[in-house]
Image (cartoon, rainbow, N blue to C red; front, side, top):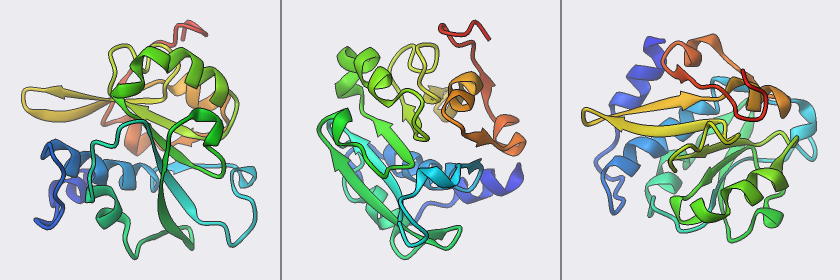
Length: 176
């Protein structure tokens, strides 16, 4: 628990996004990769990279790329990809769905349903509608809400260490 909090507390000054909170969110995305387990089917082969994607308008600037530069998860190099459409999302393990896509959220989540992709967003009701992790800002602190049922439906296992730091939300689809 403290490991995630400590990792997220120190963000290099070189990470510059338009909104400073996205520097912290970029570090959270990287750390989520260390506290979630993906099935082997989430990767094309043993050499496939671990991909963090951004769907829609990119609020991170260079912050996300700089955060993962030179890093690896489970022996896989980290790579950032940007997508304009959910149908383009292939070989991606973590997908940040920009709030620019809020009007298409139901369609996007339907397209990704059952695939081992950890969906992360910040739109209102993101987690309640089937997104897996929603960033929220409370008292000037970035927190997150997790929809465990949505993650389970996609074959993902979220560590109890991460769950202890989050608010667990009820999924509209499953009622749990």
